[in-house]
Image (cartoon, rainbow over the protein chains, first blue to last red):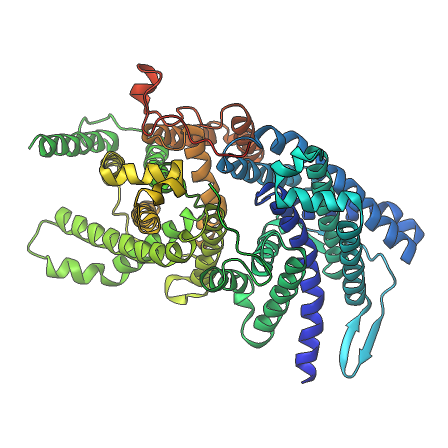
Length: 298
Length: 338
């Protein structure tokens, strides 16, 4: 039972990371109907920006303030990075066939990965510890301060996002664009601006996930975005692509099932389980757990 | 009759070229081994690119897991040759040894193609019922699953790789299958079934309204494409004599996509051109190896912005040069989006 609870906690913290990344996929898919392959790489860049920022701040010693500064800095830089990607690569091809957009996204992803290998070096780097470390024992379950941080920070960010989308004018416009881009445009919404905001938000969340994973598993590498990005995408599909609560639910479920499979079966299946789930979802419930069936109109 | 003659001529031509390249025809004249190897790898890439173009270019369904099917073909055929090859040779003992070797290679390749086709069926059925994007992710995930499975299979070497495969494939076989792939894809595309595929690419809803069983057509196209990737994998294994799960990651799938996108989605000669260009650039830029993928990815992005249909677009090379307007299926697919 204790082992199970321990796995549950581990799954929750890994799942929060997937959920944060999945939110970016689902939001971009909502407004552009694009699988943003480069999203996983934005997450990787977020981790690296966090790494370099925390190296700068290391003189201050591990403290909550420096951890907060690193996280906010990385989120800000990646938000700009995400907007830049959209502006330079996606906007010129937005009117083309969807396949063109998809190929562009693959190109952007490959480009970021390979430039990252040149800039950051192909070897993994080790994240310096940002915040003071502590272990807590609750009912026989070991909770590290990093795990608690991951869970609390992700929860906070998700609540903020929900507030933004449901309560602000820009959030309302985002919902309108994701409902119908053309109709939103006819109603006088500046769709270009909303798409940019969506990319900024998604990229900031991915950067937060990158810093959080850096704090938890202190090893970061230029190719880390691929597998995390793919699993987060599976999470978004599992929850129902385009649905924001779905992305969170999907992320948590994927995290949980991965941890359980590794804990009880074999770590060899770590990367295969997510895709097994994906194939099952596509057969049984292609619209995802919380997604709506979208009728194709001609 | 005419077709048979052409086939015989192609076979004879390849046979003579092969003999010339390895130095068996004219004493003292042979192709440097390095160039021969590059040429052979280009041939395998042509097979991969042309077969992927059937599903990505002509059917308009975006698969990015071609390396997974290649891996199945490579491992299945290599496993057959290593375990059952000698038994087959013993049964065919009355034949000359060259024919025995050919029989082993052909059986191995058929098994590789068959297994890759079966895998293509099981991957294709759930994902091809849905809209295009899902196929991309499922095939990518499938490729990873295949790699994980192979790494945990000790019978084929697992993560150590599979060594000791006899070198049965050579220039002749590789280009024979490249020619066969081109022929099969050409014949499919120019048949009524090919028109069906192009109709699905251009407008799936309209095709369905015209009575096309879209899922069935897409699955058939996908299975054929997977089987050809399996053959390419088998040739790859029997040419390099060593295969490793790392040879079949999604990076290889992306390479094949780059080839067909550069050449033109929906153009057979474009795929050939793309494959040759890709190999040529890769080998030519060997001393700048770390910038290679940066260059290719940038090329991909710029190409999408400037000329999304690729170099040849939907046209074939001959029509590209002579008639500027005619192409299979008319104008390149444009989507609503407006």
